[in-house]
Length: 459
Image (cartoon, rainbow, N blue to C red; front, top):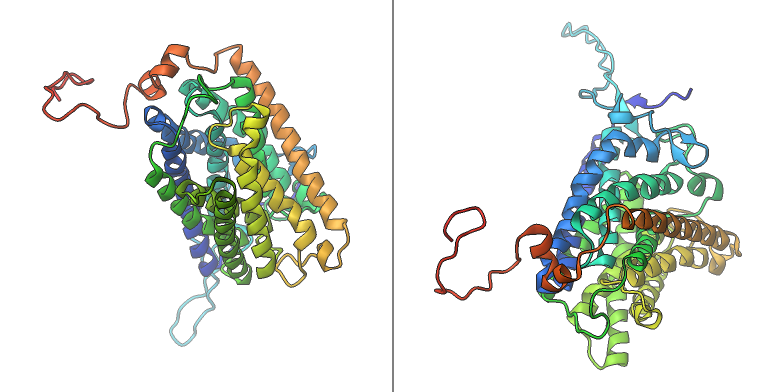
């Protein structure tokens, strides 16, 4: 059996950066809650926020029990990591590390042996556990945007747990588990196919986008869609969410360097360049197509740029980041209209932004990867031929089809057992009242008289 976990003394600078990055990535999920929450109608804002927040609970519990081990344990059958290797994070909880201290005859101080703890690279493996947990949480939360206003909350919780177990954990193993890091053998996309996905274009965005498409197809359209206007009820919420996502995304991308080094610096810059460019590209498309550049378009362009640069931030230079951002923003701005053409009610454009944006950024690596970037790979435009492009395509579409097929099966099982969808009456009255017995806004006029509160107190 392999000698994992590796024991040693962590680098304190890298550890500090990765603790901060983990917290930044966690912030992305409340950011997503605001982003999604502002995009729905007022009668669904609380449910939309709750779908993201509840993922923080469901995924955390599963991750520490077996999710981390399935994702980063030693490879089994080229499908998953060994679920028992780190079950319950066994062998990873420990005290403080300390370097060895030599004896000092002058002071009489005795020598002290090193105190080692489990490592992942140069950081405590528990920090890596925390960092990757935040990825798992937000990937599950992303799916919820496709099914706004009509999915029963209890069914969402069950789906979230099953989907994380059967889709996210295996795909994270394929993409993120490198040989010799937390197990002797890792996933096939990272180690055999050698497709580049620095921070989750396939595992996070294509994965969640394909799942969102499958789930909204099984669930069906919202009542009245597309004829009834379903405009965002709170655009400041949307922009707040986009700002929090951009801020947290530095942990997502630069944090994926797993060290406070030059790779982190490069990915920080390419992320910024692509995101700003994508926002402008989306606004340009809007201005040409609709005659107006909108706040919703700016927020959506920010997210599209972040999605597109996620897989490619370590493999392109600044010029490449400009191209990734421009194409990511423009293509996603056009792709969000596909739901009207093909008739699937992807409520908050998970397919148009995350699946299409993830595909765009992942495939562009095969064209724009430059040997000067940290990944040191040559794309087609830098003399590398089609070698990296076919690898990127195989990885991207393998994740897309796996996620779509397994999600469809899961959704159909839940549909015909516990049920997925609200009743028509509850959908019309609002999912917040039906599922949570709350409303996001008190719309009773001041001075309208007291009513008996839900918990028996006069309000």
